[in-house]
Length: 191
Image (cartoon, rainbow, N blue to C red; front, side):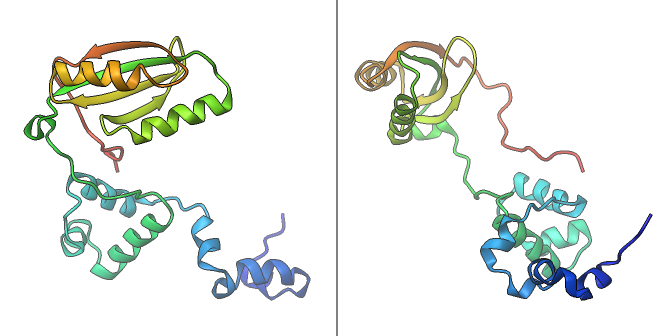
């Protein structure tokens, strides 16, 4: 078995092109650096867990809880943002406090399943404010929507005058949410 150290690898003239790309990071563009797959370690996961619980937590507070100084914590957060691990920061709103107390899960099947038909439907879903989540699913239906409205009358109006009027919608089944047992956006919980 032959072991080649990174130092030897980078100094060897036969690998000049590889060396230029991988050993001298300062010549790589920012875009190239951010496309490299980044795997979070335990400290990153601890940071993510804290940010999921409270996105307004300060870098100083995170540093104190995970036993790092503020600079590495800030750099880790920035790296996770640039690599796409952290997609965005958002405010979770209590639906009923802003007159959106009715939540409905809608299962939708399309009449035609061509690429253009699917793209048109997805674009329309992105334009409908009442649809807060849209999933492409397998099974009897093609899409599952999470819809919020003020009450049954506003949902009826949405269903009849918006959703059912969309070109290529075949069948819609509505399921009304009676109560929320668990609702979370946290995907990192174990470290």
